[in-house]
Structure formats: C-alpha cells, structure tokens
Length: 140
Image 1 (cartoon, rainbow, N blue to C red):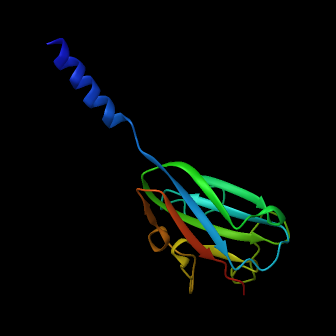
Image 2: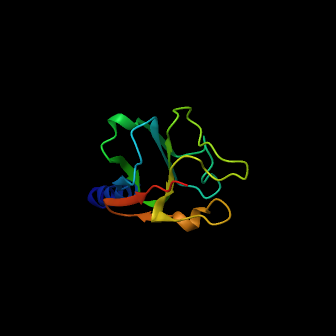
C-alpha cells in the first residue's frame, strides 16, 4: 500500500513540473546603431501590442546589440513579439500624425500591418520546443 501511495505521488508531481523552452529572436534589417532596440514578448491577446503590458520586455543599446536576443525558460504556450528601433533613445515608438511608426519596427511572423496594428493572432507563435524566429525591421 505504501508503494502505491508513493507511485501516485510521483505521477501527480510530474504533472506539476512544467516544461520550459528558450525563444531566440533574431533581428535583421537594422538601419543603424543609433539609440536602442526594444523587444516586447506578449503571452495574452488583450495586451498585444500595448506598451507596458508585455509579459517580458528587453531594451538593448543598439551599439551593443549582437543581432539576437534569447528569452530563456518560457513556459509552453502562445507568444507574440513586437520590436521597435528606438533611434532617438526616448523609449517611445514615435509615430506620424496618423499613427504610422517613424522608427523601425517589426512583429513575429514578419507580419506587415496595413491599416492598423496587428492582432495577437496575426503574430502568434506556439512555443513547445527550443525555437528561433527572425524578424525583419520595417522602416518607412
């Protein structure tokens, strides 16, 4: 009986251990090394791509940027990435009068917005193994 209880406890504890994986974001098309690069990782459709509502946020000096960044130990699930090249280092994605970014930007799945910002579903990826994605920045 004691062994059955131990086996049940071991089986139940396996379900509590959640697997985690790394997501590497490779950024191409960086126009220059002015300012910084902001990489936002989102895991909820309601927060994407709103600033200050990211699951994880990284800001890297563009002069020190190696071309990629790895988010480590992420739980299995759906994610979307939004990036902008903060050329003037004000930590704001500056836009023109109709809301189009004046600084370089990009989204996972290299989604190119047409009329409005993309939805989470347009850019989402499913992370269930170690993964690398490449995002090409868009400059207008």
